[in-house]
Image: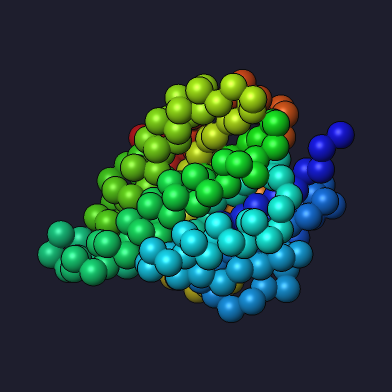
Length: 236
């Protein structure tokens, strides 16, 4: 049986960190890359700058030195400057797309030769890629593009004859974490909660369980799809 190694782009995010902590025993080796300093939560780690194209060569060399295959890939980086049309700058727009979208394309290209015969890829998108929201002009459109990217790549992967590669998105709603507890419990957060039919915020347990499903053989018929995790936020 092939080793189930996990490659995480954005390994230091709340979503990725919680997933690795909860499901570590399912993987032989966990490899992470992110913009933050060296990580102790993964077996191998590469610090890169997603806004500088030099990261592509660094990832290529990193993979060559590791020389292992990956049956599971999680793409979880994301930046949100909280912009609207009036405040967004060209630099922030470019950084958002470099981190949230472009890196997925070019890192997956580098990973292709290191994917196992059966590989599952999960891209972390957002409810903001599905419905409009104020102060999300760059973030929301980048996540919408990420959702469509999964569809295009899924078609491209049909041309890979020697591997069965599936790619899907996960789009969470507001996720409770250590950074936003005060905000979500504030009057503004409680107002947001009223927009959710089931009056619940998504938890990191929710996202980890959904990622586990998408990476597992239980989701093998899902190809280029977007799994929405929002307690009903986007249905009204």
